[in-house]
Amino acid sequence: MIRNKRTFTVTTLVLITLFNLSSSTPVLDSLIYDAAGQAACSPYVCSRETSTSYHVGKVYQYTYDVKATTEMQSASPQQQSSVSWAAKVKVHVLSACELSLQLENGEGMDPVLEQHPVQFAIEYGQVRRVCVHPDEPEWAVNIKKGVISAFQSFPTNPEASVNITETDVVGTCLTEYQDNGDNSFTKIKHMSTCQNNQKLFQFALNLPDVNMQKLPFITSQHVCDVTLHSDGKMASSSCQEVHIFQPFSSAASGAVTKVEQTLTFSTEATSNAQFMTQAKETSLIYVHE
Image (cartoon, rainbow, N blue to C red; front, side):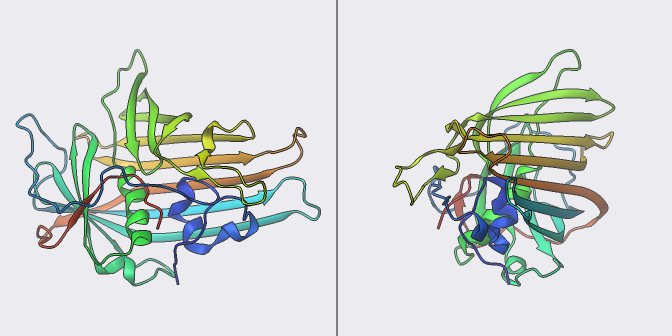
């Protein structure tokens, strides 16, 4: 069954958090806070200029696949842990700017993940808030925030890249959007700029809480390739995040974690989903229990 554990990286909350891969790298601990707090969710008023490619009263189904691999580069014999996870993702369109996400039929998935939807408001491609059921455990909310993050986008220019400050499950980071033509773009997070993200706590050396992406012995990369349908709906999103923990000068030593996350459109149908009657408000940022 899926449970929230200590993690080695940021996006690994999507998978490594679930399966406790961190047992091979006990040095790191997640110390994340939620900047938005947990106020009750009031009705969200969409701005007049809001337009969406997702039609009210429809549900869009995606397949969600995640694979995480952690290995020690200098280990002999090689030490590696690899885990994959898959589920169906249903996105119900409740209004011009408010969507509801439901996870279903995940292989080996804890039934808790299927009990409650997560509602989120999105305008101009950016998630404004997230509403969750009061009884849903934080670890389950974190997993769904990872899926919601894949739906964020920003208008791009074919002749130049666009840099914005974007908040998602990784944190608040300088993010570069590159237009690739043919309704596709690449999203690159500059991890050294991230705030409100995963913290490092090193028990062995008794270090204080610090920003793990800014430590000289940790190198992180986060890149997503996104393809849209001609009407603007997301067709696919493929993200790869790599973290190299290299405390020594030797390039042959250290731990590497790679997380690959893919979201692919499958079908569209009529939705009968309703707005949540019980919900509390949170941000898209990962929250440590």
